[in-house]
Length: 114
Image (tube, rainbow, N blue to C red; front, top):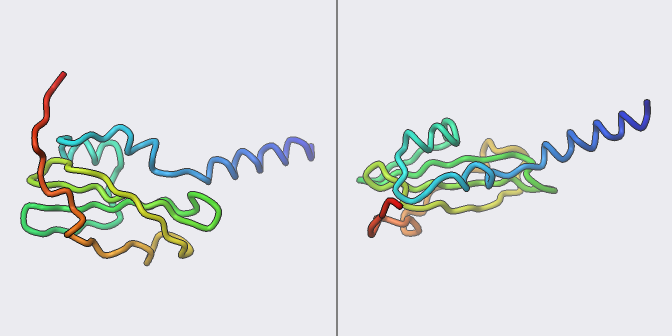
């Protein structure tokens, strides 16, 4: 019984230590906001500036003492890039940073379908 309890605790611990990488790997430059919503769900934060938009996602406890954050950047409704950062606050609430628009990938040069 004790052995099963230890295994169960280990599985729960490993499951809790996740990042957003397994979801963001499915997002590509040029994808629509609808596709991102289908993959990532509703963002914890959304900021707008002119034609640009930034959606932020967070997973609390992604590793030992940090949260995993992803910013998905849009221009005119299409993904232009994804950036990451970590925070060490407890939980995601209050740990989301203000968008620095100068870091935004602001346009798509060209996308080709294969």
